[in-house]
Image (cartoon, rainbow, N blue to C red; front, side, top):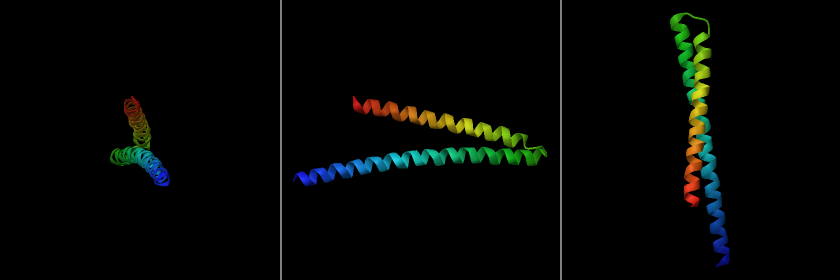
Length: 87
């Protein structure tokens, strides 16, 4: 009987760690997609305006800033939800 309880706890712990891993992996992919989308937009703007890589640099930096904002916002929201669950 005790052995089944220990296996259940271990299974729950593994499941929780996998959920955390998947959540943060998804956040990383989301950051990469935001940066890639804004970089692509900058390249297209440079091609359209026949400019030097000015818009590529601007849009890439904006994409990095936006992805960091979204990432930090999600982390803060997760922390707030974890605090509420613990209460």
